[in-house]
Image (cartoon, rainbow, N blue to C red; front, side, top):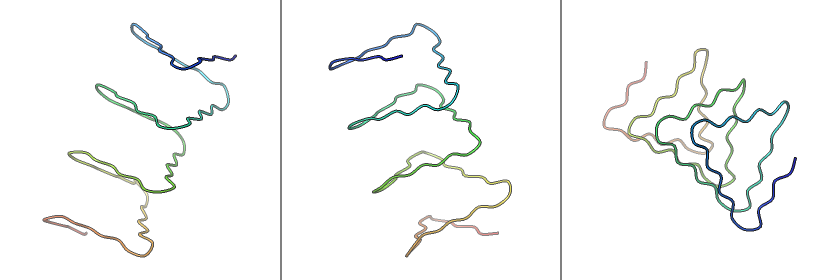
Length: 89
């Protein structure tokens, strides 16, 4: 299947949209991608890898990372923690 749009493409769905891919899906974007989600974004996978060739910024009011077995932080040449209070158990 091939979908082609010369310049702009706009797809609107009234209620629900589902895409099922039986093996692999690759999306190549030449410049930038922006997604706006009104409520919640959930991604489930056996393994997830995020990689940025320059920098990665995460912003939120609250941020939580949890590992049930183990967690490793590797700061390369340095690791900087800034907070009014830091607790290590």
